[in-house]
Image (cartoon, rainbow, N blue to C red; front, top):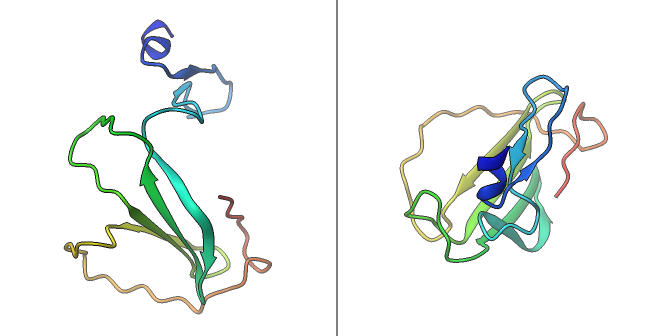
Length: 111
């Protein structure tokens, strides 16, 4: 707990199996924040994320980053994070789904 809080993180013990006890608070200077509103696409949603500050935990950070969420089936959600300004290698794996509406899915997506 001391090491967690010394990093500026939030400590919250839990009885839920595999739940993290140490995590960044919502107002953390690390990570990314949504830029603008989510954009609905024909298969789901697209959101642009920008780095919160110049602080970096791992180095070589990319900003902005695009998050695409695709409702592939009633029980399968696909998400993809990518650099919109530079093409990078992606595993050439095509898993196409018929697409569903959020009301038909057995999951929820919140931003």
